[in-house]
Length: 278
Picture 1: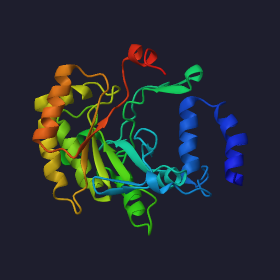
Picture 2: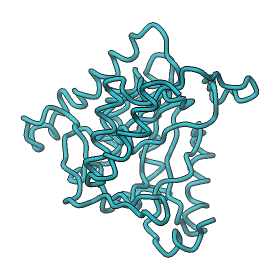
Picture 3: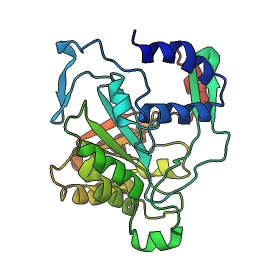
Picture 4: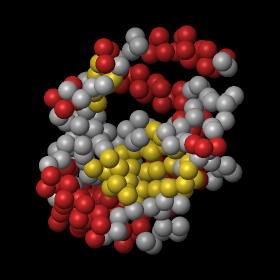
């Protein structure tokens, strides 16, 4: 065990548990961004864990889903821990605070957490008003774009980095927000995820309907096809879908030749969660 790992196990983690859950999350991101997260220095992944999916090479199949590194701060730190890939976001075009606090809760007995962040995102320059930005979408994704562009210039990557795109709560034209995300952040993404399934953004899951989803995918694919390298496009769907929902999503995915689906987002059905523990 390295010195950093010992400090993490015997000092950092006990201290983290004394903090509010969201404060602990933010501190973890800060430490990882500074290179102070535990690092997988002594072991190499077994060759049989390596795989290739959608043209991407993965050293192992265990990755970090979107929702942890929301603002693309700790990609190198998370990959250094041993993850085979990292997905940042969800990132929205404009800054928004997300849901009121408290919005993250520990379930100590279950060794789990509940999060209700609601697409809190740095988005663009916080000094600009939503109305002005919505009209022109100028300088959107400024902070995330800067971080991801710096990342893409590094000489060696430890694994693929995906970008998970969200929409702003006030935006009525969902496809427009996703298109801007593809245009601004797509050039730096190994793969792109359109998130239409967070349970914490009002109305978002209605975008999984056949007509709404087909409209979004059509417009997003058109923007993606103009990017160098044409990164894979995936749709992130909810776990608690009706049979009709599944049929609609499958129809769109097949007819539009979507590269893949991510199954699944956070459930909003607590009965489902507590009755499906193993």
